[in-house]
Length: 196
Image 1: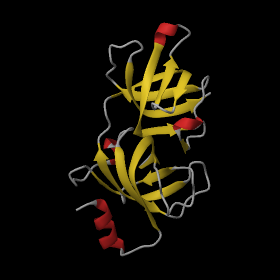
Image 2 (image 1 turned 90 degrees about the vertical axis):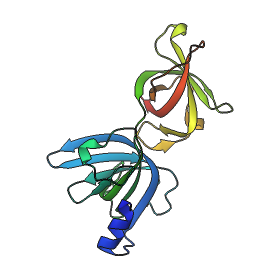
Image 3 (image 1 turned 180 degrees about the vertical axis):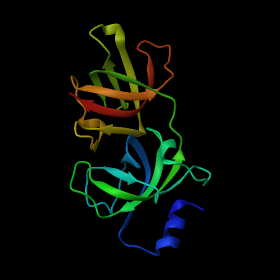
Image 4 (image 1 turned 45 degrees about the vertical axis):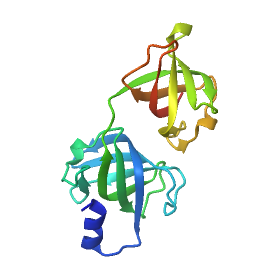
């Protein structure tokens, strides 16, 4: 039984609940007894904001479950996990908006990741990759393959697409820990964040 079923049985059918599926945990912070989990998602018709992100307020009332439906603590959540979440439609007007989380269900664990920062040398929307220079040396180039699951975020943390990236942008890329032995080396990008 998933957390959504538990929530509906506990609270009844509530039209003030928003549900998102296959969201990615982008950031986690903690203050006292509250955990703040920022998620990015696609295609949420119920969401009042088109930002593609929400900062969830997670506390002792939030039902958190792993892939097998077992209880989890908020401290076990990690960046890069894929989750289904239900949260209040009452949101702050901040960027990203903030809302109380009712349930979080992990659907996929975070892959082993590394982080690379550099400047975009090339954006290839036809073959879905970006080429990054980690420093001024051309031999520092890495090709990051963009998949349908790759989360691309603008400077303000809003979800965007590959076509909005440009050569010269400085980005931080969370990516798989393996790289091919090719020149340039290649790997899969999980999160691409435009930075200053």
